[in-house]
Image 1 (cartoon, helix red, strand yellow):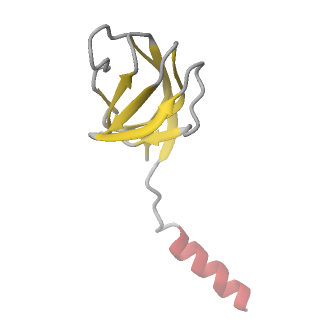
Image 2 (tube, rainbow, N blue to C red):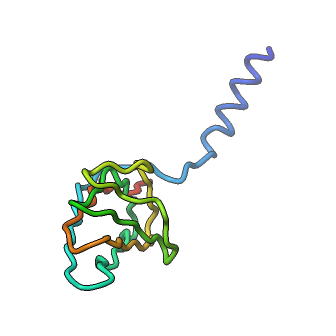
Length: 118
């Protein structure tokens, strides 16, 4: 009898629970920048509405770089040779991001973009 009550409870209230949404792969985004003027910064990038970004990799050639999220400077560096210890990094819609390069060298950021679907 207790099992029957538990099953009825789960069926009655389990369908009322709603998640925030599911993720559906949309595209791969590759951001690159190479600034020849001080302070060697990239354009400002914004995660589009209805999506989330998962930063998978980042790197700079012959230099170090750091980044800024929503105006907050992050001191973790993107190391020479393409390794970065704080990845993957998930960013919700509306997040702004900018990269600072330690010199006039090229940098890249590899991103997976997902649509948030209900």
